[in-house]
Amino acid sequence: MNTTRRFFALFLALIFVLSFAAVASAEPAEELAYLNGQLRVGMECAYAPSNWQESAASGTNVPIENVPGAYAEGYDVQIARIIADYLGLELVIVKMDWDGLIPALNEGQIDAIIAGMADTAARREAINFSDPYHSTIYGMMVNAGSPYENATSIQDFSGASVLGQRDTMLDVVIDQIEGVNHLTAVSSVPDMIARLNQGACDAITVNMESVPVYLAANPDFVAISFAEGDGFDLGFTGSCVGLRQSDEALLALANEALATVDQETRDAMWDTAVNNQPT
Image (tube, rainbow, N blue to C red):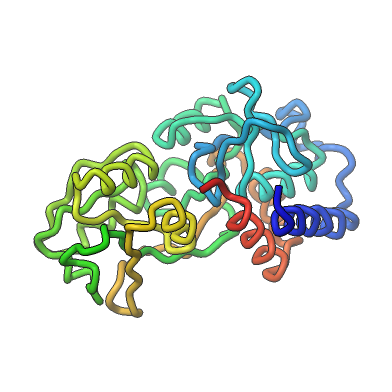
């Protein structure tokens, strides 16, 4: 670990100490007894800087229950730690495919989704969502030299073959581009990046806050952001915790936990995740 990574790891540890010093819940709330002392959280562990998988334990990552010898790290993991600690519950991370998260939640395999999931209207029909814990902006990524690399509006991609991630807004928003060739979505962001690298598409949709790590690993890519009014209309503000519709007490307590973390601390946690994410 280099000096910068050590600094951010120590800084994050300090944030945890300060944040949790005033947290009251040494024991689980009585209304959460059905959770049996655990908060089982589902995530992909493949969506850095929100969440990713590591092979060695550290002071901030969490073992992945269903992947022996692997650990989950990232911004979502730290949000999950805050909520679990506030509730007095043991945090258990379960790695799952994105499109299996909501079914797993409603079937009781996990108790919460903390995976950079946005509270879209369609998802609200199936599950509840907490207050947002991170805001987001979408943009596009293309190969250097692409005829689209100087685009200033999403409508400049009319006629382009654009790829997104299945069952996410990264796929849904593509239809806002008039005349676009909307390719069949793939299962993960790494799959999207691989297809772009192979020239199988003209562009992919991206979370702009994740762009630095994408560009570090793929220097021949170009990221494109858009001015307000020229970009995507997301219809949501960012990432929320997903919960079963019947878990009203858990929802209220999760929002209480999130309210203990001010914006400055959230920004510091996000910067830590961005600086420590794998490239």
